Length: 301
Image: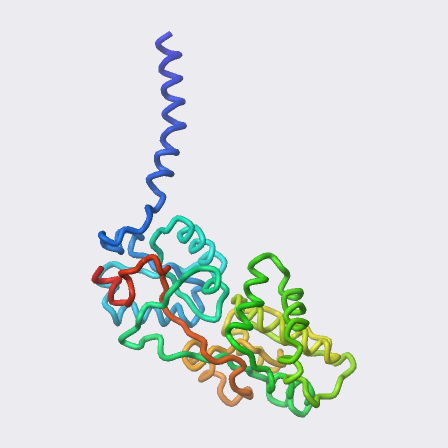
């Protein structure tokens, strides 16, 4: 009898311990009266390790002395970061992320960029269109459309939000083109139709670049091109255009994010200028973290 009772208690303990552990491991709602660092284990939730904003964030950690306070940057992926943000936001838990705009998360959640008094992240960025040398001569119609391509952060975010809701990138792009034909007409004005010429675009698999690449790819398809698109890490994207393995990319964040690759491959590509202005990169938090407004606050509050 005693043995059976012991076994029951033992089995009950096995069931209870994981439950207790799970409860204790969950982050509590944000408490502005307590230090932020311990609430999130001094961790900034990042994205892909190779992204430019990740290296900039490492610089920010040092410049603001956060490394001396045990702050660290956790690499993940864009989807993992936004998933973590979603869970934290729903429970009003504290979180600090590497953010950028345009991005659908700024439409879906109430977020704010932290002030950057040391200007580590720089001023607002733009996204440029980079094409291979010789494209103007080989495929002048594509060159002209790519040169004319320009839209706003709000327009890009509309496409991103649809993709996030489960619509395929290609359909989201097609729907947006149907919705805003006047914008597209400016890109294709006076450009002749072609008949099945191949064209390859490469891009970084960020939500913003998935949106822009699918939109411009569909516009070029409607013009008569046979377009293929391929996602890569940032360095291979630049290399693909520089070596003429790809015709173009519309995902060059400048002057800060892709500065290294712009310098590394200078002279091996043609910069057609901005296809989107007002892009921004930095650390961001939910607006319910009312007392956290500057990167300095991570150290002091």
